[in-house]
Amino acid sequence: MPRAGLTPAAVTAAAADLADEIGLTGLSMGLVAERLGVKTPSLYKHVPSQADLTHRVGVLAMVELGDTLRDALQGLAGRDALAAGAQAMRAWVTAHPGRYAAGNAARSSGPDDPLQPAVERVLASWGAMVHGYRLDPRQEIHALRMLRSVLDGFATSEAAGGFQIDASVDESFAWVIDFLDHGLRAVAAADAPALARS
Amino acid sequence: MPRAGLTPAAVTAAAADLADEIGLTGLSMGLVAERLGVKTPSLYKHVPSQADLTHRVGVLAMVELGDTLRDALQGLAGRDALAAGAQAMRAWVTAHPGRYAAGNAARSSGPDDPLQPAVERVLASWGAMVHGYRLDPRQEIHALRMLRSVLDGFATSEAAGGFQIDASVDESFAWVIDFLDHGLRAVAAADAPALARS
DNA sequence: GGTGCTGGCTAATGCTGATAGCTAAAAGCT
DNA sequence: AGCTTTTAGCTATCAGCATTAGCCAGCACC
Image 1 (cartoon, rainbow over the protein chains, first blue to last red):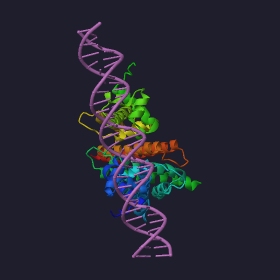
Image 2: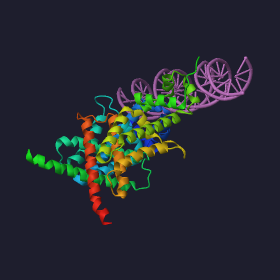
Image 3: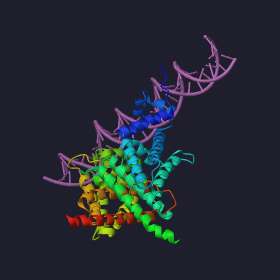
């Protein structure tokens, strides 16, 4: 019997794919093993536990989301960056709901946990989207938290099938981006005099 | 040995309390039984399965959240309603994270599922908050979805300990409410001429 | 005060995560 | 090539939790 040639990364990737297909809660070691053409105990040669595996899926999710956002924001600022980043985030979460759920559920479990930098990269992208509006620095953190809340809430609600009413979700999303853009521009404009005075 | 006098509602309440304390994922039939001073199999005389129990917790959550929002919005409109409703929602979710998680995870499982009306009551409260701004009716659904996204995203992120940076979450929340209020008023003002014209 | 329902119990099953120990495939060395 | 060492995958097994079966005592109602 030839070897399957698994690696921790391969196991994580299979688990992530499976999580996207059947949901994070439905994930089991048996299904991951079956997907890889291997018996369940073999997985433990590459991954210490199921908890660790889902943690790895969460890290993978944040790394991929960070890459996606970075690519989407290349060379853009202001409204363009907001629209592109938000759309990229929504599309990625819609395509990878299981991964995203794992990423949200993951908590940092040590000083050299790769989750930390991955999350920071995502936050940095959102920060860049906000920073393009040149707000009062003291307000940036609030705007960042709002942006995060909106994007996460929208993506999560959509992925969970929460938008039942018969109205285009695409249209709603565009409306939300528009709303945020106008609002952020208004905040920036209101700050400008104060900054000029100081 | 005297009887414990359990009911489906009592079991659900115990499960909800436990979910708030240890998290929805940590919930187990054994812990619920222990909390009630009973052995595990006894629970099945009142609840058909664990899946059904968590579903009941989700329904309870939506009913309670609906009541909370209805109470908070009594006699308020516009900015006051927005602020009161948002604060009430945030406080309730922070106090009952396990219930809320169950409510979000619950999917309607039949035509006469009490989850449906409970969710609709919550949506109706959010709808009332939005309706107070007198938007173009075609935009209300988008505003409602945005409001839902923001509130859900903010509460979820806070409950998950996602706001790590050393800045007041209270302050951020107040800022967000302010942002939404100004934005919604701007949208209403932009619509007003169009409505007058028609 | 008997009778039927019903809520709680103990015992047992099945599934899933996880460990122990074996074997054979790969990798390295001479 | 042939020998040794490492290690990936296997079978067998255990442990924990959800769930079911079947028994028995408390309580309601006559």
